[in-house]
Amino acid sequence: MKYYTKIIGLLCVGIMAFGMITGCGMSEETGQKKAFQIVCTTFPVYDWTRQILGDRAGSIEVTLLQDKGVDLHSYQPTAADIKKINNADLFIYIGGESDDWVEKVLKTDAKDQPKVLRLMDALAEKVKEEAVVEGMQAEEEGEHDHDEPELDEHIWLSFNNAKIACNAIATALQQMDGDHAQEYIKRDGEYIGKLSEMDEEYGRMAAQAKHKAVIVGDRFPFRYLMDDYGITYSAAFVGCSAETEASFQTISYLAQKVDATGISTILTIENSDQKIAKTIVENTKAKNQKIQALDSMQSVTASDISKGETYLGIMEKNLSVLRGALNE
Image (cartoon, rainbow, N blue to C red; front, side):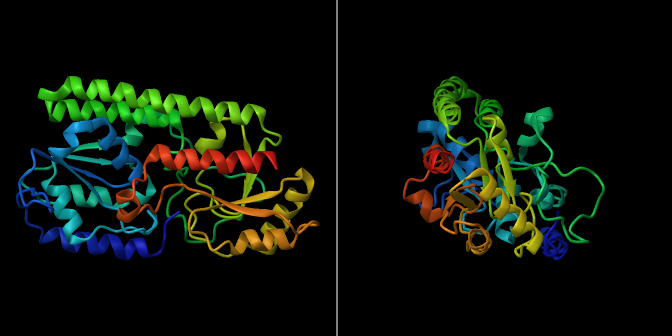
């Protein structure tokens, strides 16, 4: 499911890449050259990398491309972004539909291509098709440009996937910076331990929950998260949909689902205008359901990071939201 603007965006990438020149990797804050440069496309990848680097993060420049709050499905790289990628020692990305631009950038005529880690390759058969369940609004003609099944790129919303991704990142760091390989192995093990602890918390929460289903009045990027804990789901749109207006049939189905299950919380993704969720509430019998947001980490900003936002911090907040939604 592609946004229509992606065609124009990819053309722009090609034009910018054609005239791209490379330069030395410098720290923007100090002007001093770092030992290595790493570029990450999304916040979860960036945070995992920083966690595994540990104290080495002060000697290695890690750049997050998508730090302006733009939803990852709408992102297209700037000329400066392409230059950072071409100058990097290591480039880490998810590899889903929203990263279609990467292939074109990596085909540019740069002298030294970075080592590339595509995390969907690391996950292999654990990558799932995008969830399409009863009641979801069908996509409009033109959103699909091929007949292949759509793979769900929101792989980071599973602790099991996160562990595999972190192992792959740690391996790439060892290959890049062999002198500190043991540090990366140690930090990776410690961080995976933290991921496992929170995974267990989610498991206990789901096992003790009053409800075993959620209703999402929005796009649905949470398949991996819900599948991990046996939580069923109904939603307005698939995870990468460009739709913003739900049909009467979709609203009616979800409202009836709320009435039938007794669920008292409608979920949305972060930064939602809640329009669809509010319309669902208005069409239920009780008309008093709460609306809460689960954070899919698709629009974390540099400001959020400077205030201490982390992957585990966001997932802990999501745990609280989900616990409320499944028990009220």
